[in-house]
Every structure is written in structure tokens, then in C-alpha cells.
Image 1 (cartoon, rainbow, N blue to C red):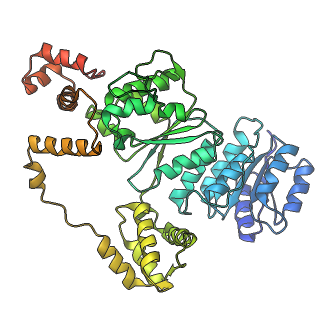
Image 2: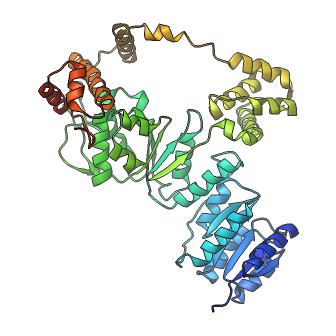
Length: 481
């Protein structure tokens, strides 16, 4: 029978040392505890211990600073870092410096016991610490359990090029997370380039992403550089990926599969040296069922899914967020404000349909409009009442608008978006194509891919429907009969 593993615990909190000693001792481990870093370092230097559990803040040293020294002396020794300073930067620094895992305080004892088991049995391999830089500004705010889990996942992803899919409601901070992945990752020296699919006209998305050659379409008077080329060596953030048209989805899939792309009108393949981070507020699985999003592209993008919680699920973070936004306003020249406890409690009870973005706007507005240093409940009630959107129009109004009126409204917005210049030539065929594609896709989705039933529903000959599917480059997938 092998000898029991020895766990070295360093924490200046007597209660934590006692709890860990009892819990791990009952499982058969030998546990040695200390309240200071000097004793821990002596044990490690003497070759003792199979695993280290250390706090960050101790009377005589910083546990994070000890991690690289321990790893240099004994590369095989696994280290679990615990901290009440549970921010993203703490998690990132622990991972960069070679810790096996970071655990925020207060911790779940069952989770820690499970983590000890994994640390002692996982395959051995030296961990090379990255050269992370300190940063005084936190990219993400919050110490709620939901945010702690996000920090831990982000810390694990920093040293990789894995594709990440960030989901969450509007205003939850998806671009902040994407920027954190870049700014603290292995591509931090490269560019961070963002593109919002919902903000680009559908017919221009491929050119925006991949660039175009001179003369490739009407108005292309010079070569255009796409976002993939701009992001070379860095990170490309594809925001609102659920709004990407299907033809652009097909080209993006080829890039993810082959690692290269061609410009619009070009023939020479260009290597894509970028990390892809995508984000959406949509339910992409529902979009797949409706035929609006490619299933194979979804799985290529959804390598590491990361869901951002809405603010109503992390209300304990509101005081910290409020302090942060007041400080930002103060940095911009406004007087520094605070909220009294009744005002904070009211903010915690609000539903926040606009999430963190809505909270930031409210705090900045208060900082600008109110003269008192401490803001009370009355001011908050007034601002929340002002922010409450008017009741939506009766659903019959939209339902009775009619297809012709809806199409006219969208086309008017399209022309207005060009701000006096004319849209690209070929507008008639392009508009018909834009209407035909979703009509056929939705019909195929409603008939579960049965082309015969879809043709009957559309009032088309089956051969005509097949021809349109080919012309519109609709990927009908495996479900089509």
C-alpha cells in the first residue's frame, strides 16, 4: 500500500487551518499547517509535501509571489491558491505563475476536497509561468459566485488559442470579457479587432470581414482591408454572431476549417492567424432549428461556451459596480458621489432589463445631475421611474402592419443608413434574394426539411424550389428529405 500524500496548508486564519486539517485528515491525507510563508518555504525547501494549499495574503509574504519560487525549486509540486481578493486579476496571476488551480474565498469544502484529489492524481507536467504584467484597472467587476466561476474559466483560457462563444443578454459585458481574454492572453501584443454583425449591412459583411479587391463589385475603387487582416496576430471579436447572414457563415466556416481565406474577388489564399471570440444574445440552437444558423459553424465556434449572468442574478455585485462607475465619473471631472444603504437596497431589488450597461448609465447620470454627495432613496426612485420604458404598442399594431408596410419601413432605414449616397447597384435582385432566403428557410424549418411539403406550402413546383435552394446557396443540411 502506497504512503498517504502530505498536504501543506499555509493560511493565517486559524479556523481555515482547522477545517482543512480535519477534512483532509479524515480522508487519509497527512496535513501540516502553518500561519506564515516562512515555515511553508522551509518545508518545501526540505522536500516535504506532495501538494501545497496557500492563501495569498499572509503576515510575512504574498502567496502569489511564492508560487513561481516554489515552481522553480520543485516544478512537480502542485499548488492551490486561495484568496479573499477574488478578482479576475487574482485568478489570472495565479494561473500565469504556475498554480494548479485558484479557489476564491469563501470556498465550498466539498469542491476543495475534490480539487485536492484531482491535483494529486492529474498527470504531471511542468508548468511554465507566463510573464504577466500587473494592471491597476480591473477589466471586470464583481465577487459573486457567478463572476468567480467566470474568472476561473477565463484564467484557464488565457494561455490558449481556443475559440470562445460568449452568450448573455444585452448589456452584460460580453465585449469586456472578450477584451480580457485578449489583454491577458498570449496574443496581448497583437491587435484586438471587433465587428458587430448587426451593425453591418448584410451585403457588405463579407467585404468587411475578408476584404475585397479593386473592381470586385460596384464602388470597389481600391483594395479594401478586412477585419481578419486587421486582426492578424491578435484577436477577432465577432459580436452578435447570430445576425450573420448564411452566405457569410459559409465563408467563416471555411476559415475555421482550413485556417485561410480569400478576399472578395481575390484568388490567393491568405493565412488567418487570429483567435476567434464570438458573442451573441440570441439562442443559436433555436436559430439552427429555424434554418437561420449553420449547425456545423455553431460547433466550430462553441468550443468553449461562456455564459455571462444577467445583473439580476448577481445583485451582490451592485455596490462594487456602483463604486466603480462613480469613480469613473469622478476621473472624468465630476464630484465623487456615494449611495446610502436604502438606495443600494433599492438598486438590488430592481430587475435591470438593461443589465450592467443600464446601471452604468444610471450612476453616471446621478453623478452629473445631483449636487449632494450622498444620494438617497428618493433620487433613485425618481431615476428608476424615469428610466422605465413606456408600455409597448399593442401587438395588433405590428401584426396588422402588413408585409408591404414592413418592407417599406426597412428599405427606408436602409436608404437612410447610406446618408445621402446611393446603395450599391443590383438593389432589386438583392432585395428579392433577401426576402426569398428567409421565406424558404423558415418554410423548410416548419416542414422539418421536407421539400415536397415546403413546395406545396409555398405554392411552388418542387423542381422550382430545388432550383431556388441551389441559386440561393441554402444549406438544407441532413434533415432535408
